Image (cartoon, rainbow, N blue to C red):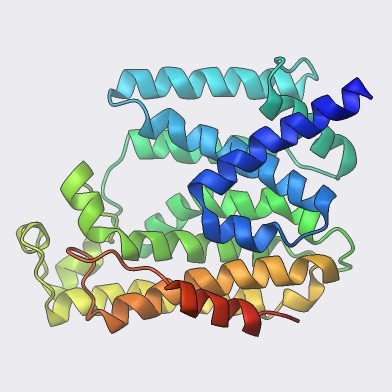
Length: 285
């Protein structure tokens, strides 16, 4: 009985992390059957730990040390010698229950390393490569849980969804990324092609050229959302609502930016609670 309580406590620890950091994901994935929901919480907690290794340390050295420590912990987990911590205990249960793959967990850490040694992407392909490592990898982590019964390989669809969500993040956070980190995630060759410069970004100029590049990435994201939606029926019946709802809520951020006249600088673009409820109602399949 004590062991059971301990396992429940471990998953409760992971659940608190997703609850605190992403209410929309939590709302969507908490609708899964309990065992699957808990597995998603554990994976989210791992990704959040990787993310926090970078976000919670200001200096590059401290960030790299934190990621090295996480890599060491993942290596120990790989050898079935994981440290005694709620996250790793919960993940062990997940790996014992589902046909999990370790590669995307390492990919996620690689994505965080790319963020530390950041340089402005030159092409849309560069943006998508980075987006795979930080977000497409998450789709691959979740796949054995949400498409466990599928007769088709849904890897591409899961990766497409992750990349689409990351492109959406980039388009939502253009002003914040530049203001707080001095970073431009938009492809340099496209900015050069339309003649939009860093000083215009610094002064938050929303020109036709800016909108052209923004829409290029938004259209690519929407194409990837559609790729994912085309295979939604291949996901487990009990998981379709969760993944569909999270995809549609995230996609709604693009609509929000457009409705706010492409202001990714002074405004925080998000899906309102009323709109979220409408999207979630439409997602019931």
